[in-house]
Length: 483
Image (tube, rainbow, N blue to C red):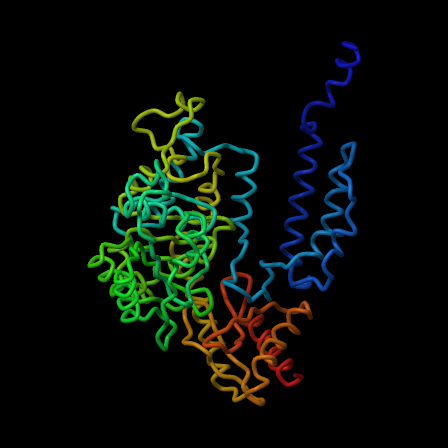
């Protein structure tokens, strides 16, 4: 038995170095070919639900399989079954992109495979995270009193921010919880156009989905400040405790910007937490001509920015900034005995700033791409998005079949087909989007504004050129005529 075990030991290690080197070269060629030929692919598949699963074995393999076969199945099964968010004709959501430097950064991160939970477990990961957080803070003009931490998404960031708001509104909730303490019901306020992350956070934190108050918008889809003040006053009279406001800089549907300075003033008067959701819009503050969107940020308690939306970092990479980040640390720091030797006083341990213990080395990919592009390169690419967005808006204004449905903001255009009976317009606008997406030639999204269905295009992919945008506009016109 012992001899047999010795003879089989070579099976218990990793791939042989020379074979691994060969596989890496093969993968490098595959990545380069994929990027070079992505435009030839369908943007989205036309498979029915379950079609991909039906082609996959129901049982995992008993014996290992060659990498070449696995990569072949990626080509055969996975790539055709994807919505290709990096395709130049993908114009949905916020149009993010996988740049070449971003891919290289991800490739570098994978073999390092560290856990960036404490300074001791990986000093380079901790210190690089601190550096890139500070680079972004300076780029968007946040004061140095804001400290940051990297999470995966803005939804996770807002949950952490509101956990601190809850602790400050009801001290000792970290230790005692909310139950049987005679506390009032807390209220969180945000606009009708804000992201659903506020409700998700309220559910998670025990505040309750119904205690997120949706405040109506003005004519430009921004939070109505007068109605906010009225909602707060009404809730106080009813015995609720207003806890926080979530203002948005770049709403999900229209990329509208809430009047943050006015909201901040109300929060200061009412002693409420102000969170600014700048997940999409935050990156645009790097442009001098968009500096206005950052007005009032210095009065916020927390701000979230997603570089994976507008600062060209691959998904996922979101930064939460908190004015005096120790407020965040006081809520979440907790050191298990097994880690006590790896947490020395004075060192920054990012596990203390959130619920995660295990943390990816996300900062590395941001560092690679921001060094590759530079601040000027990022600004130039953002300006090109704005130029093409305004170009699309000019085409819409010049075509009497369509109308803009909201003010054009940053890289987002909402518009509507109007050449039909009013009773049919919602269905026809939806059909145009669905038919284009089903064709595989482009990908758009649709949304509702003031109860009406509208088409929506989001630009942000560096591979998308003016020629791609012209093709998409032509396709929209053809579908409009057909319906």
